[in-house]
Length: 344
Image (tube, rainbow, N blue to C red; front, side, top):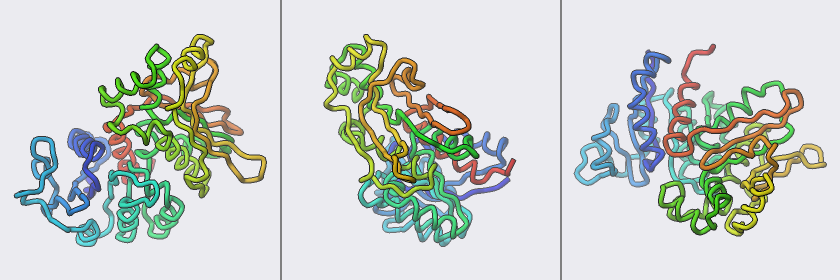
């Protein structure tokens, strides 16, 4: 049995889902993988929940909300770096903070600090990966640790598993993806008769869209994902400025329904494709008409999907995967398992 110390940074919907899923899977992890995962701390901006041993749910929440006042496990101003230094190398940081796509913080500092302390990192937040993925990848290699990012590249949809491992030996010649469940749900419902405002309101009422949906509907979540996937799969160094982005707010219901009557679909499609200049790629996010024969045409509702075009394996498509905090949590857990499981 291998015991792995973890520190979770951020305790929003994904952080909580991860903590819950890890507890749910505790015995399964021991039986199938010989792993005991111990969350030593949950870090927030003001400090950490930390008791010197594995945390229990009662130590970090009250009535479902994180709480600090009078909580004996709350350590104001305690830093993640302090816990990593005290614990020693070999643990894993679980990065779930809110993404800042301009600075990468606070995730960038958390992940960098983990690497310097000899810890691996798995990430659900995208900011650090959008801003500094090549540098983080190089630092991880220098320190002999792993950086895993499944949770940041379309939650439970296995984008990087396919691109980095299943397509080994093939040359990727194009990527197309429906990578945001919120916008795909809205466009699906518009095809069924709702106008944009009605579809968005319904998505918010069902908890699919955030109260402020701009990050999704303006296309930046999708842009971040196609950027990270492209950089990871091509070993490239593109930035968010290299992605042409157009969201779905200006799409009319008449356009979506007309396409449906013609047997076509409107999707917020992310693409990465080679330019004519050697070694240069074009990254693009925009509402796109796709034919019924397209492998992503029937990806509806909150579902997501990705297609890789290759030189030797043909077109490879994966669809599905839970599109919610539990799906992202499952992706984090998968990455941790694959860091520590025995080779096979």
